Amino acid sequence: MLIRIKFAKKGTMKFIGHLDLIRNFQRVFKKSGFPIAYSEGFNPHQIMSIGAPLSVGVTSDGEYMDVKTTENIDCLTYCDILNRHTPTGLVIISMTELPDKAKSAMALIDAAKYKVTLKHTVITEKMINKLMTMEEIMIHKKNKKNVMREINIKPGIFHMALPEPHTLILLLATGSHMNIKPEVVLQSLCEVNDIPYDKYDYTVHREEIYYKNDQGFMPLNHV
Image (cartoon, rainbow, N blue to C red; front, side):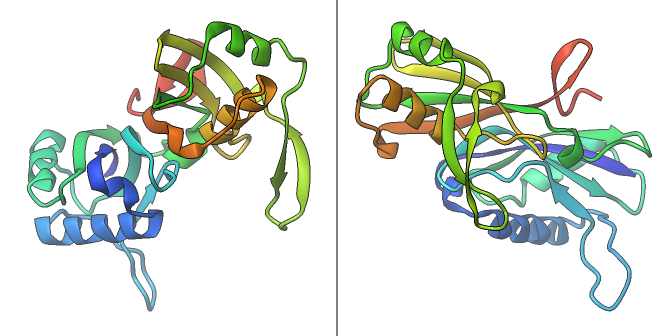
């Protein structure tokens, strides 16, 4: 049975890196008696994969993990059971059964929505318009071979809005095709408006992860 787990990472859990997060879940599955399937071979491991690793220091209400179980389970019941064994700040929100040939969360992801809280910096609609009316937004980024190259991130900024004076909403390309982090957008926004950028002036929270179909952007647990 394939299951997609949606979970939140809050509080001090935001300081836990990706590998430690996986280790936490491995312990939770083991302690709770969750019937997770193991791979075969000399070093069997739990069959699980996280959709899009979250940067250290970022909280989230929209993380996803795919797991395989050895037997059919009641998702609602096991959602409660797992939450009894998770550490503070790690919360299982929902569990959804997937079709047998469903694409993995990692292969599906097209975008992520972030809520950025501005602590000191003042951002205005005029500043956002100045950035978004540029034909290209170029940044320098190292590729997998550690070679610096220049890329245009504008096609990966799907939406940017300022619903409240100190709250910025970003919908950014995420996944294997294009991956735009909120900090590079914030840095570009500051640079084009000639204001200093300090990463500690912003609190970033990932609200949801999406795949795209004919109906638009859909949350990963929309099966």
